[in-house]
Length: 195
Length: 293
Image 1 (cartoon, each protein chain N blue to C red):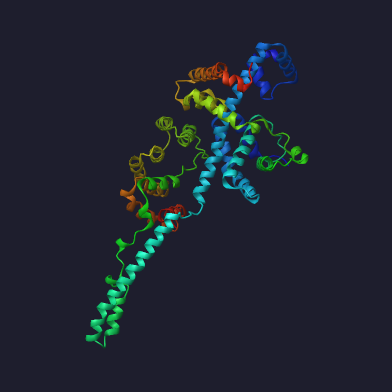
Image 2: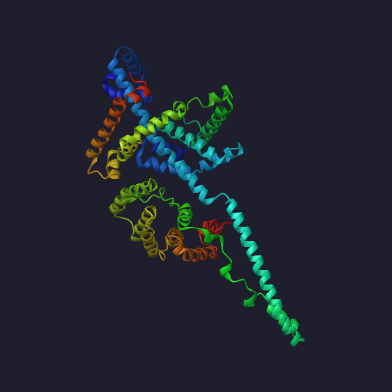
């Protein structure tokens, strides 16, 4: 199945980052109604509302990341791809709960999905949240914009800086602060396994 | 070539899976022999994990917002609490008592009449027993509606639960304000009101009505209901915004608490009576929440 022009523009917008990424993700959610379809599927599988939101959020993270890092092989429509991630995510959740073994056939279908982030433990999530909190709200916002590929001009506009150069300097300062925080805290060093 | 990139960029390319096979070999070789490089590699890797965790939070908010919008459109039926059952039972008992009490009064009033005017007794009886007779009507003050049990805080909570930002991000305007407006909504969703306010100030090509609309939502977000209502009231006759403005006026009025509750209910009833109003369904849901049915 070939990928549609609309899907191609969504992929390009997500990869470009910044405000166009936001618009593309919203278009994908609201115009293509993918979340509604994902929820219908999970309802047929006996999903409860809290569980469903969690599973769809995780699936959406993988979807977004795989598009951004260009690991989506464009062999199906974006909608089909997203729904397959949701299904895989749901099977995995169920497997974790019931200790079932994921079949090889199923694993083969989702081999291009990133799994490393799904394995993050609660402890890791807490450490990351604590670390980010130490950076302060402005730094946190700036680094989020930076990581979602907002241009320095966009960052300058959003953060109300005088220009792109100022934005660049501020982002650099925040990244430096982040690295120093990781380096200086022995608990974090141990946690991140840095010698 | 690996050397064509600074070490930091090379590591980032490697971690993102964008490095060439030659670069991969170089990075993996240096990881074994170069301690300083290994340290730098670990640090950048951990930095990437932290930065990705920030993106994750942002990405999750898209799904969360969608779920919130679904809950508003398709709310779960409200299950009455144990206290609601006790309250309903008490009210029912009270009403039954009042009804029987009044009926006794009617009978005692009618009996002497029937003795005096026998031929018209049935007519008098009918008149006295008629529900239109003020004597037989249970005074409204005795019927305590469930919505009167709501406190100021509850009313604000109910109003805010029904309040949802309009889905405006997808609109292509083709002018300089497009990005600013998208960012305004994004900031509003993230509760970054100062930045949203600054973005509002920087808009130059939008209409006065749209600016009022955005400002009203900013005030709603900040829970400055009086100011929000002032702006929404200015839009009551604006063709593009009047329906939305009517709805948000109800929510703003309700959020102010008990003192303006009656006003909010009147406005709510007005929308419910208008079968073509685009917010009628939401109004029905809100009313059900308020009266606890």
